[in-house]
Amino acid sequence: MYGLYLLYFSLISSFSSVLRSVCCRGSENQSSIAVALKDTIKLRAEFPDYMVGFDIVGQEDSGPPLIYFIEKLLIPSQTGVDLPYFFHAGETSK
Image 1 (cartoon, rainbow, N blue to C red):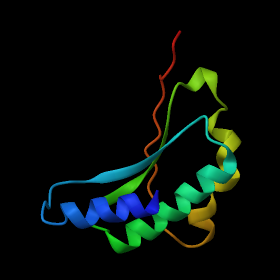
Image 2 (cartoon, rainbow, N blue to C red):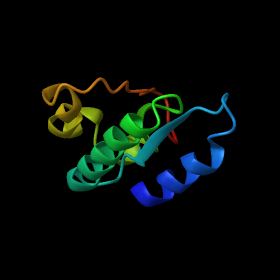
Image 3 (cartoon, one colour):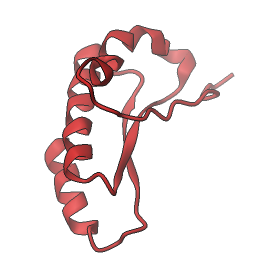
Image 4 (cartoon, rainbow, N blue to C red):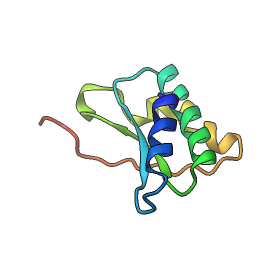
């Protein structure tokens, strides 16, 4: 994923109004979330004007709650990195 985002940001660098967050599916496992968070931290360091944060998306009633990922979601703050999260509620089929 990191390589694709790196290419994406290098291509959009001439568009100053484009902002992006990395999104992962809520159905991912904790290891995948950790990798995505670490990639996001690197991308935010390289492209601070474009990379705005991190989100977990997907139908909430079919996957684990956000608290399931708390250990991994604390990685940025535990390493002194400011990484905004953009979580929202209401993605359900009911």
